[in-house]
Image (cartoon, rainbow, N blue to C red):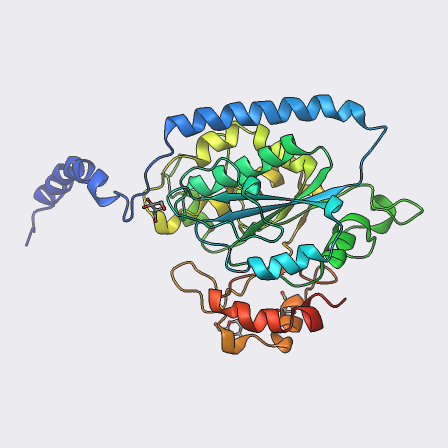
Length: 359
Ligand SMILES: *[C@@H]1O[C@H](CO)[C@@H](O)[C@H](O)[C@H]1NC(C)=O
Ligand SMILES: *[C@@H]1O[C@H](CO)[C@@H](O)[C@H](O)[C@H]1NC(C)=O
Ligand SMILES: *[C@@H]1O[C@H](CO)[C@@H](O)[C@H](O)[C@H]1NC(C)=O
């Protein structure tokens, strides 16, 4: 026992430098994720610059406006398990109303699923790791490619290989592009014309400022690592899958300031998840009123395991489940849902025409 107060304080003082020596070891990543290779960053920057400058010049061509399209951005590190379902979703639609872009991890041999999916839907992709900024890079790459590819791309829907559509393409397109009642949060006077066409589009992205994990996520790179660009009061959380307007997709690819912070590696991979924070934080800082603050991709976070949401298995797939997953408090319906195991394809296909795409 240390009874002498002098010896006690001396011991404490002595332990301080030892703590500093050990700190890097104690706080070393539990699950280190390699940093983004500088070459990837250079390639991305040149792509983003080309996309943002092309967007500026194209905005002058607004008189002969083409029909608006939805860009579907598939982000995957495996085969697109539900491609037959997506095939049917797209097949029943007008080819001039959508574009498909796929970012597939190059270390995985992702097969071209056929149908509406072609080899030229695959964009130049880089390696991705779970819970790392590489997922943010991949999403930004998809947006930049889609902006460059077609000036008619008006909405950018980020989709994973575990996502399924909950409605027909027609319903999805109408909800995003022309419905004046789909989104409960927008005021009809501000956002529609007399003919009911929404003139001021919003991004459907979840933005949460209250979450008990937010502080841990904020400090995952160090207590002051996000300062001064992102004070804690401005740090947000949200879902990884969203639908952004073209304006916001441009905001995302033009951003350098926040990206410098969010691309930094975290001490612990299990408290990082930059893909759940970068987009909501950036858009809530730049244009909070241009976002609905909720997502159209239904996820079941009850009983989450290792940061993964609940994953539905074939025996749970039923017409009742689809109806249940559509129910939203913020809009007329959710449009997409995740996650499902690959073998859910069979029961989903069985009710594709009779239920999912029947609206
Ligand atoms: C992908 O396919 C190529 C050629 O078929 C093969 O050489 C390579 O090992 C495969 N890679 C993986 C990760 O399976
Ligand atoms: C969400 O997952 C839980 C299991 O963790 C399940 O009991 C519940 O029914 C699911 N909710 C929906 C809407 O499917
Ligand atoms: C809708 O709101 C009710 C009441 O607050 C809540 O119990 C329910 O979980 C919400 N549904 C969704 C899909 O968020």
